[in-house]
Length: 144
Image (cartoon, rainbow, N blue to C red; front, top):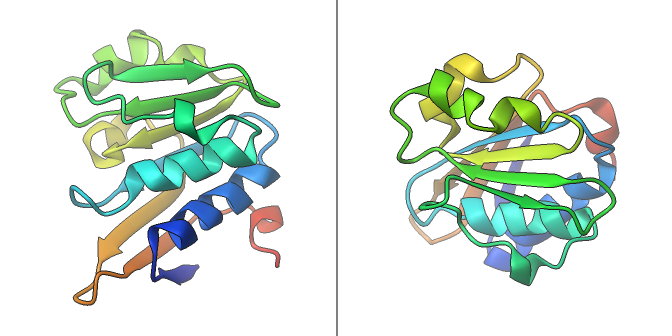
């Protein structure tokens, strides 16, 4: 699936729509250059789960933030500084399977991601819009 988001609000809305379909156990693997909209998309997923998006910030220095105020727990990770994917998994990523997990800079932990991960690639176009490519999306997330 390929989506063109002309504004950050459209990126957020896409995340919110996909978050609305989540029931727990989903993994979103986000990639894209700095400033491409990964955290905006994550805030949208959180909103779709019933979590205040203002509580969701990039966990670059924390590595992993857990939000429990929504329908299901939401684990938001940032793998930008990860050097050892196996250590990252042991430090909490593997323990959060009951909720929705989302990781920014997912290409850095590719070896530990499940085959069912939903890959979200965000690319900044020349006009500032974002091209968002989504792979491995369950069929219920593709509807209207």
